[in-house]
Length: 184
Image (cartoon, rainbow, N blue to C red; front, side, top):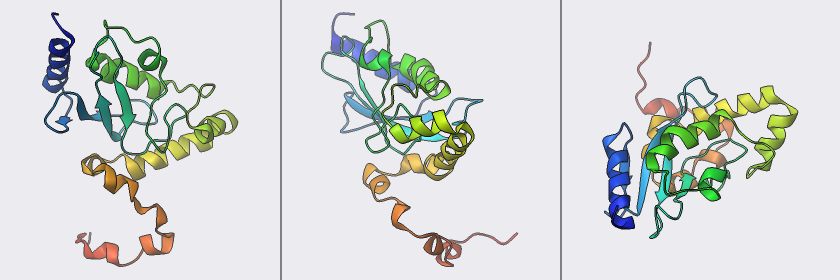
């Protein structure tokens, strides 16, 4: 590789040519979103997340910034910002790694093997250590609520104004039926 910019182009193109849906931001290769599916045989299976990737000017010598756009319940992901606590990205990054490593190895490993002893989400870590069954249930609830395929098409602003403020009574109102669900 002759320069970091050529490497950046090559890595982004490799990601685009793979099975990942990549959506560039501002028509550049420094910021983009990637549609990421939860790993098979995990609590996150069936979930789909939009992952925000920001490549620094010094990429691949400096690690990318990675964050979940839609919510996920995980000890090593900050629930509000979506920031990821993963040593291989934050501390031991090497130019040997590329973007495909992040989506094919690092993120699946993070979801398969959470580390509650180094949390960004203290609630998730605490629940995981105290009541694994309840933790598993909450992970699945978050997947159902925030990680559907249609959630990855929302803008960040839409996700921030999610339906958290809607009461259960409002959520079950007949207005939901107007959307056109067919009777069985």
